[in-house]
Every structure is written in C-alpha cells, then in structure tokens.
Length: 318
Image (cartoon, rainbow, N blue to C red; front, side, top):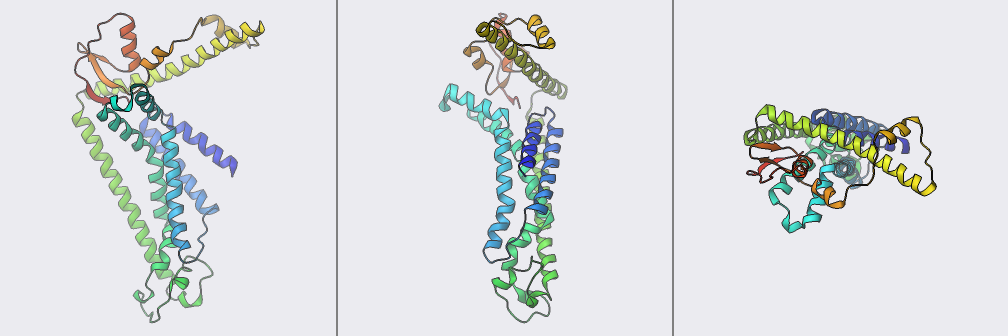
C-alpha cells in the first residue's frame, strides 16, 4: 500500500509539471480513475449500520477528493509564485484582479482530480448506495406492506442482508444506483458547460490573436524548460566549485567534468534578481513589442531598453 501511494505521488507530480494542459488534465483524470477503481476493490467496505453508512459513504467520496485537491494546490508552481508575490509586496499591494484570476486558474487545475474522483464514485454508485440506503422508505416499493426501520434498511448494500428485505433489495439497489449515476452525469454536464463558457470568455476577452497566444504558450514552455535545465547545471557547477574549495578536490565523473569545464560559474545571482523574475505576471507591451514573462522583462531591462510599458492587459502566465 505504501508503494502504491508513493507511485501515485510521483504520478501526480509528473502531471502537475506537464506543459500541455490537455495532456496534463487527461493524465490526471486517468490516474484518478485507476486509483478510484483500486480503492473500490481494496478499501471500500460499507459498514451496513445506521448513521455509519451515511458518514462512511460521504467520507469515501469527499475525503479522497479533498486530499487530491490539496495535492493539486501544493504541486502547482503558480500557487507559490502568487504567495511569493503577496509576501514580497504585502497583501494590500497585490493586484486583486490578478490574484483572483491566477488563483482561479490554480483552483481550476487542482479540481480536475477531485471532480474525476467524485464523478467515478457516483457512476459506480457503491458509496451512494451505502450512504442513502437507510433513508429509503420500504413502503414505496411494490408489494411491501410492512415498514422497516433504518437498522434493517441499512443492510441493503450488504450480501448478508436480512430476509425481510430480500424481496425488494435489488429494486432498492437499482433505484439508488439510478440516482447516483444521474447525479454523476449531471456533474459531468455542468463541468463541461462551465469549461466551454470559460474558454469562450477567455478567447473573447483576449486582445491577442490566436497565433500570438499560441506563440506565447510555446515561449513560456520553452523558457521554463530551458530555465530549469540551466538552473540544474548552474547549481551543480556552483556546488562542485564550493566542494572543491572546501576539500581541495571534487569527485566528478567524465560528463560532470566536461560540464564544469564548459560552463564555468563564478557566483550566484543576488536575491533582488530572483525577486524580479518571480511572482504573478501580467502580459505587458513596451511600445508595441510584447514582454512575455518576468524574465523577458528583466532581460530587456538589463540590456538597457526603455521599459515604460503600455497598458497592462489582463492575461496571465498560466
């Protein structure tokens, strides 16, 4: 079980670093479906007891969804960019629209896994049948003339159900499965409609052309990939230099020796530079020329360009 949890954490970490949003969302949903199936087989056991059924069914749907949501928030780098921005500037000086929209993006991505978990749980129906069985009215079924209390009705999901409810047990399960799957399909429809409306609103409000938006997305992806790879090399070369300074030598393999030789590092960047390239970013233009990221803006500033930016456009680096 521990290895399974560890593999899922690695799986989710890979997804949340994905540069393609559609692939990322699809992989998250697929991983969640697999986890839900395994949970249903291994861990789900309805207690078949009044009150406990209801709490257990809600927990089986809600608690894993909450955990997946929190993991999604924690693994999203934009969340920590936003926190760093508010910490550096102070909460009062943070742009409310920028913070709201960026937080909405973070929450939107983090909701993929919990919504998938909840929908699959509802479509399977086991948790819903468990939680709702004790509230059924036995007199609503054909040919049933005797009222049974919650103690008896709570055993509907169980294989060892009492003889009193055997006559309508399957009908009760079918009714609850229908309700559960109906709710699941309703959630799917609402989510699909919401995504459609958000995408329409996003494209209608964007002042950029479709091709420029695509280029901006490609630029962000390339910049992030190159930055991370370069940062890894820089950190390794700097660490090698410091270790050599301390011990008088450093144990490197052939590739690492070539890397240290090809990329000499004298010092690291000061904190003000890191602060300038970290945080929430709004798309800006400098005399009609776009600035696609904080790093892009910083680089233009370093080479001496006038950065009196044009009107800020409410488009976020997401």
